[in-house]
Image (cartoon, rainbow, N blue to C red; front, side):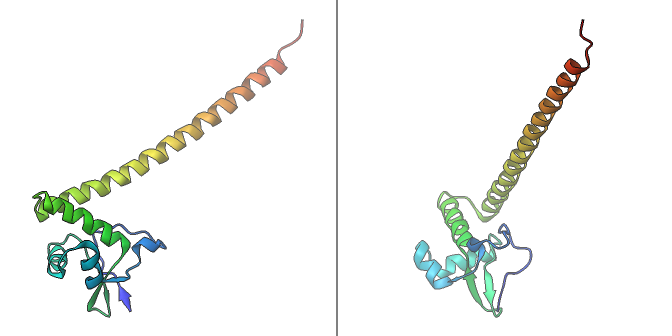
Length: 133
């Protein structure tokens, strides 16, 4: 059985295939060109939490791999674990805020369209109710 530990730093997307754990540490190590020890160190530093198969073997998702690529890039630039965690948190916050801004803009647009429709109906009612001379 594969379980993702609670309190994970990775974003949760229910039903999303990208979040499905499927790669062993050996495969991820080969894909990213990073030794397994580095991947374990990133986990120990709290930068990500891969799923565990029967509580033992780590399994990484596509999201985890994308996150590891970012972590490795930041690490190569000399950013320490605390800085990486901070940057990743800010990036997640930005994504959430961007989504909220999109939703507010869409709601505002719908509200403006409704206001214009009401205004047009109001004008039609006023024209129809004026007495003819």
